[in-house]
Image (cartoon, rainbow, N blue to C red):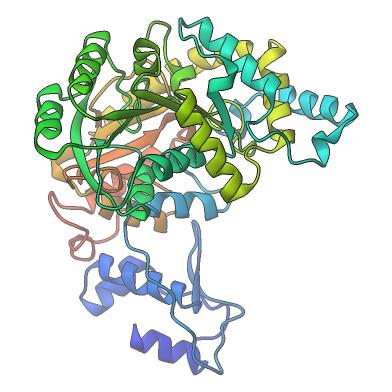
Length: 465
């Protein structure tokens, strides 16, 4: 690292010059590729080099060669890693590790129509802050939609927020204090882990399977640790794709009755789930369950519109906090677009098309992965993710680093697991895997990784042809 930094700052390596490949430089220096990855990422954090997806690493065109750089914090393979790579990637890069649908899968025509309609409306929608609780008409739409699913919530118990993540954060701020214990599924959505770290709480994972959490382990955690919250997905759990069974839902709520536990149910994937999927909020009637969610997965990630459904006293506290921290929650424009799409019939047609399209994509992707030795742990009944075990104990984080060099963003299991037990797992987004090159590259890169290795054997075995 010191050698490369010196060559860059002295001009020996010129601006825009391509650096050796990770595997090539590792072989030349008799070190593991993971060491070179760390060197390049740290030099990138210092602003000296930049990665070009699918091409390699280059000296930055604007490198400050005449004065020292101020180093920035080095980012390891942590819960932020997948988000950072996916959000900052070139739009052309392949992203089987991202957590959203491709643009072509979204209801673009309906969104455009809604925006045109809103632009013609008179009033403060385009310029005002909007009501503190969020658009009243949209909250009524949500109340009616949920009533169709036997979940009866008056609009006064629904708070609109700037996003699903903001909804969870607001709940944490109201319900938690530093040192409290929180249960999450293991594995769970990696941003839950990152957000809980911010709130400085103790996090304990409960193993999650095809039909929900391990009830025996959950009961033991409740007895031994007196957790304040349990954060979970009921429908199409992220990342496993499992869905809570009715039996498991009843047992969870029965356990919760004997403990001071509040359950936060993130239902962001519920519109992907088949009818009849169990819902903790619906069964509980919001007595000990808080429901949160958004429309970023099924409608648009650009429309930052989330929601919280809870008991009146909790909604009041959350509304006050939202005013204190952001003055207003969801954008009136975003809320109006969501309301137009939900009430125009296009959303139901969009979901109907998605169900069939996703089922085909899950089946085709699972077959292609199986052909190269990667097997789904669960075959989901909905959604767009497959939680898969890599063959022969190969390290998913090492594979993700190698894949990034080839222009592919993956989601390794380590970022999802509280216990650190998912190192050989990978979450795949089936909608982002239409290019057969992804499977060819995965197979070639796995051949470079010996079972149980973190990438050290790549240089020894050579680059795949």
